[in-house]
Structures are given as C-alpha cells and as structure tokens.
Length: 158
Image 1 (cartoon, rainbow, N blue to C red):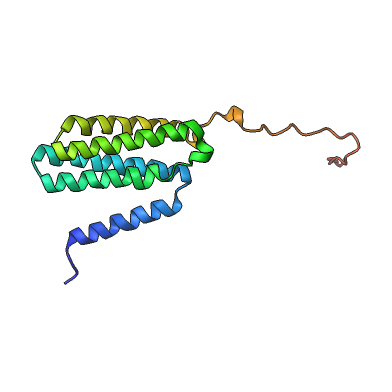
Image 2: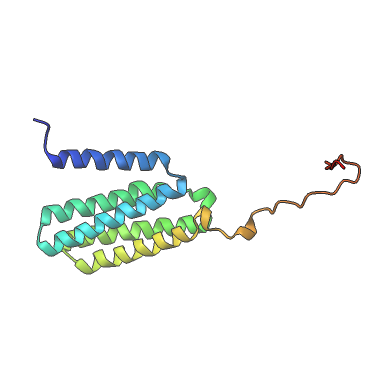
C-alpha cells in the first residue's frame, strides 16, 4: 500500500545527501566526494570477498566515477599549479588500478587505492578552513583612548 520500507529508507538517505550537498562549503563537498569513494570502495572489497562479481563491478565503477567525475573534475589546474597536476596524475593512477582490480579480481589493488583515498581525505581535512591556526586571523585592535571623547559619569546623591 505505501511501498517498501527499503524504498522509504533510500528516499530518506537521498534527501539527507541532497541537503548535505546544498549546505556544504566547497571544502565540505570534496570531503563528501572522498567519503563516497571510500564507502563505495569498501563495499567493492566486501563484494569481491563474497564472490559477487556484478556487485563488485558496480561498486568499483561507482568509485571510478566519483574519482574521475568528482575529485579529478574539480581540480583547477590553472590555479592549482604543480599540486593540481600531481593530484590529477594520482587520480588517473587510482582509476587505472581500480580498472585492473575489477578485470583481474585483484583485492590488493583495491586496498592500495583505499589507502590512498584515506590518506588524501585525512590531508584534506587537515587544511579545513576552520582548522587553520588562529594566528592567521587578523587580531582586533585595542580600543584607542581619546582624551576628548565624552565619558559617562556616575553621580551619587548626598
């Protein structure tokens, strides 16, 4: 009558994800991409261990899509210079390793890419805008004493 509880849970998860994306900062969006790739890759590892070839292939394809269509596509190679170029090469390497892992059922390649993604996510979190030292912010100057400025006075009655 009302549909399955699984479809309700999926709809709830989709709304939660869409809300998170709409509210996220650019930095937060990259973290979400890393999280999605890591979850998808962990799923691929479990599916490969279980012998679920179609499921494994789907999870690996989803991970490649997140890496190429999300992380790699978000690189600004002009402004990012050498760092962006190196990340681009690393993302390409990860996608190729995932493709090989899928074709040859090589679990160790999935673990290698998972380790790289987790390291990159950790590094990215280390440069979060709210984790920068307070010393980089401009301190508020102390109030300037003005001898001619009106002062409040308190009178007491006798």
